[in-house]
Amino acid sequence: MNRENESLEGEPMNCLEFRELLHELDRPGTRGAAQLDTAMAHAEGCGDCGVLLVEEESLGFALQKIAQETTRMPGASRVEAELLKAFRQEVKPVSLETIPMRPGMRWGVIALGIAAAMLLVLGTVIYQRNLAKAPDAPAVNAVTNPSAKPVDSQSPQSPVSAAQNSKANPTANRVAVNASTTTKPPSAAGDAEPTEYATAFVPLPYADDPAALEGGSVVRVTLARSVLESYGLPAEGLGAGDRVTADMIVSEDGTPQAIRLVSVAD
Amino acid sequence: MAIGVETIDDAVLLRRMLAGDEDSFTLLYRRKHPAIYRFALHMSGNSGVAEDVTQEVFMTLIRDAKRFDPALGTLGGFLFGIARNHLRRRWDQDRGAVPLPGTAEELDAIMLSHVGRRNGGLSNGNGNGNGHHVAPFPDHSDELVSRENIRRVRQAIATLPENYREVVVLCEMDEMSYEDAAAVLECPIGTVRSRLHRAKSMLTEKLREAEHSPVSRKSAVGR
Image (tube, rainbow over all chains, first blue to last red; front, side, top):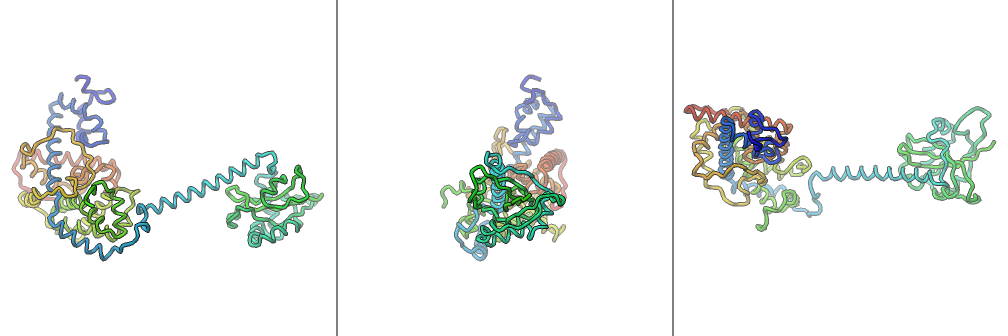
């Protein structure tokens, strides 16, 4: 066999390979079509495979002829008339704008919406983390304080309900910041632990879904004045370098949802 | 409307059809029905059944076009799928009762009745609108092709088991890709490929036999 008789990989095609590819030599995008030249070269040098190729050509041509001959439906016009009659009865004209660009696209839009929402949440989390890295950003004392949960249960109201209630009455929230309640520290240690005074939880501006608080954690942070103001909390009387201790409710996805100020008395 | 109809995308026509545009529906019908009819004809072996099935397919399109999801395949594939379901339903209802051609003469009468009645129309010649098939072999003129050979091929197709016959009709006559055929037949691409390979081997074998011995045929069309 000469070099023309070699396959794409440089290997000559044998009869077995030829017979495997024979039926798709004229089918674009297949391995057979890709190796057409090699296959033809093999057929030239192999009598048996040459016969198979002729038979394949003959069959392919006959199939094409049959396809052409059976394209025309004898009753096409009658069927068309009946279908049009049915079409007029079944399909009522509507504005083209009410029809989606492509039926089935609805699911694509939904998927896109979900992806956009996830990106938004991710962006918010990243933004918050970057904020935490800033010089005057809140210093997180406990990333997720497991002992914080019992504190909530000891509070006059749970963080979630407090935040939900606060959200329902934003005006009261501002007042609530100054009204302190006594609670035990998040560490909930023994009697030697200092007493804490805390305000009610105030929902943060972007905490739009109180239900998102379910399953969240309470995190103790130390905030600079500028950060306090960025959350919309009053910072009168605080100097630029002063820091305030606060508890934040962080939802499962890490987004801060509500905040309360904490004062620790020894 | 007649200018450039071939270039209007199926999805555009379908959208207009859903909005109640009759012309768009007519164009879709004229564009798609030849391939559907041919598929139904070869699968049923009966022109009356094929015509009924074709009509039912487009009735389904009128009533249920919103079921079509372009993410799952082409409109052509969707219509073939409907045709296939209708054919199966018929076979289930009239198992063994579908009047099928039993002799070469009957087959010829059905097939040859279509010869010479092809019109240019809106079809691309093979009726499926794809036109991607590229024949690498030298073009044969009609004179060189034996009518007897075509007759034998018709008969051989009719005697193929249903699974094999449908891949031959879809992939060879309708020039469907393996991917589209797999979507229609709801099976893996590899299955389509292997079935087509096997079907063509069977056809070749049957043609060899027919060439060497006069036929006494009993059609096995319709399972």
